[in-house]
Length: 202
Image 1: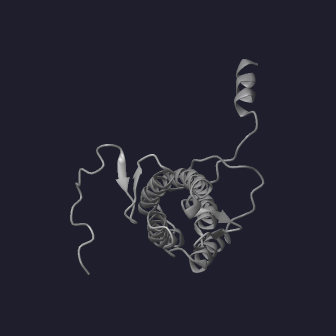
Image 2 (image 1 turned 90 degrees about the horizontal axis):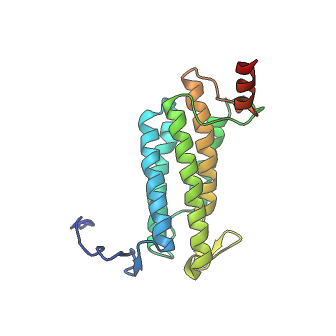
Image 3 (image 1 turned 135 degrees about the vertical axis):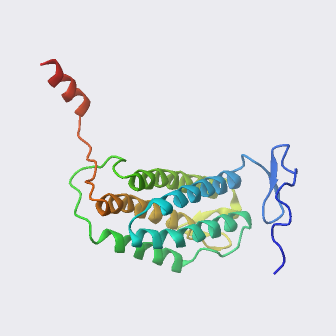
């Protein structure tokens, strides 16, 4: 196999444009670049979470997720490339079930916090939701990425479904990391700030 990255500094993007893997030149704020950039950002946060995670199950799942996200970016860069599949979706759903099985039912919403790994899992979760929105926007503005009922114009597309499942996995991963460290979930208390101020003034 030849070298894919023969040059890192190309100086071809100085005027606000870049080239997709398909060879098409687009503006750097175009929908496909916005989608790929957000997925890249998500992958970086996944890398941080991987280094901090204490749960072996979470770490093992995240290692595959990083490769999957790179595959998804490649799919956007070269429209029609069948990277993500039902197998990817099935695996992330299996990862969700595996880490969620040992958790108790939630009776209240939880806040981001607790252990560092848990907090970063919540950061990754929110970026994942943004990546999902960017991918949907791409599907709405570019006919090459048009999605109807989960199908792409040029074939099956599991990108949106995968990101949706991944955000759910990251939510439970945050709980698992707190649990692994012996730290309780940080529960939302409705109107807490007002209650505290009233108690201080009494």
